[in-house]
Length: 112
Image (cartoon, rainbow, N blue to C red; front, side, top):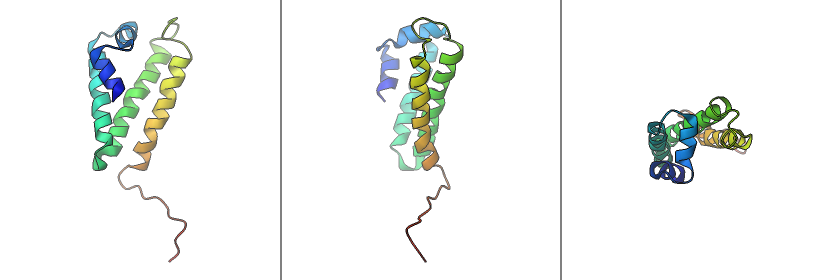
């Protein structure tokens, strides 16, 4: 939720990051709305999976942008700018996987 607010307010070097991407500041606002919507949906029990999927998509997009669009940029194109969103993508994918519709965990401790 904090990341979405930072993008909306333009704090935390978000303006500079999205300027380096070169797609305009509208993209910062669009990703901020997606981040806030995804974070909000995480707290709605029947929508947790969809919120996690939305966050996985936005952070996964940041990973792809870091690999492609920002490659070679001295400030934003470093290895840590790929590693951090890549790890966050994996962390966001976990609740999406475990809360997906139809998922039933195997209970190995019970016997019939």
